[in-house]
Image 1: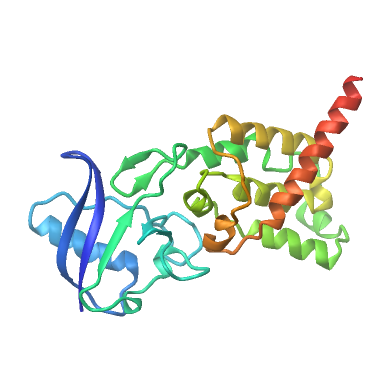
Image 2: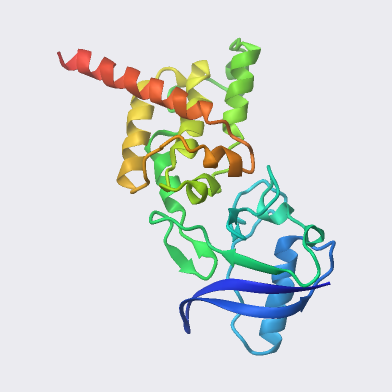
Length: 251
């Protein structure tokens, strides 16, 4: 099958523009990233600069394959990453528009590659447990209610791809940050630092320049791991509780 690609190019000889690549011959069983590999092979053979895009596991686990496809983060399939989209979902002769994630806090490095290190800094500010919980067998011996463990696991499924930011009209990182806060706040191992954690992570999120949440819920709709916006409500409760607790200490 033949497809037309309209790809954002930025860096090198490209100042920031869409470039059209017509009549690319692809196999319907190819993944989206394999299709880009074919395009790059052709560009290299023609002594043209290949399209820069991120990829790693290609199994929907790492979250690096972050592209906006026809205006949707990770493409048209619900609950999937870009690498899990296959060309059989497209029609012969169709034009596909491919862009990088658009957000002030995700500056474009080159072509389809953006700098998402802001997420790393949010995690570094408090997304961990630093208290002594003993060895693995000791930690596993702590009884945890099934419902709490399941909610924590669901939150921990976040792969930090940034689709929530790309989908949000305000470029908010609330879904990502709240998933990381919820993951640890729901476990007894994370209770000791829960107040310090949420204050530090929210402060870092604001420092990185992400927008505010306005409850559009586009983040949940586009999330490849279908992280629930209930995490945002939980983080807000954690944050308010931490603020009131700190005010009492200062009084």
